[in-house]
Length: 327
Image: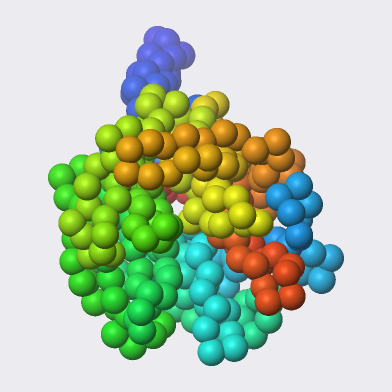
């Protein structure tokens, strides 16, 4: 009877636990009330790449990647760092990034600084909100520094102005409202402002345009320009003009979120039409198989230095054992 009772008890425990198995992107966790107790989760970190073309982008031999890692963050309990954007200013390089605050369980915007673009010093969180922040696209226009972070949980696209660069930011206006917009990416091209922004997480890519940065922003007649194609819909960094080619970067989330970065040449962009084609070098970033970016890479911010060489801030991820976290 005692043995039979023990067997029944063990079966009951197994059944209880079996009811609380949660799968995050295909990875099983033992959970309680929906929160993982033990398992593996992705850890994102930031690296620096160099090169002179899309085909030779790589970490320079003199750079120790990851250049900015969660263990460098001391002002908050950091779970991950992702979505780096660069801004050269006053003889230095500034990097803005998503800092996932483990305590608050949401993303905030942090800043790092470098004298040469290769070696970085993390400075601290510079922007937080009652909702998740990420993808801090930063740029200069006029005599002002601007930031457009992802604010999907607010169902808006927000424009921030630097009140005291780089640590103080104030909300200027909402450019779009009404949807959970992800990874908004803007550029000024041929007299107009253009915004690429995703919806349905990774499924669709929308296109808007405006005469002025503050708007009003109008939907392009061809929008969505990518529909129900997670392999190329979600932005992976700011669009850039390189050697006369206007490029946009996209996350390849077809098989798995944030697996690699693809590049597309924008062949036509005007008020009536949009056309693009994937470049031969694509995908330009992907998993290395080991280390900080073993499992995937999903972002790039590419800049051309005055000497013609390229500097790119990228991110990558690997699976790590984690306890008590669902991200």
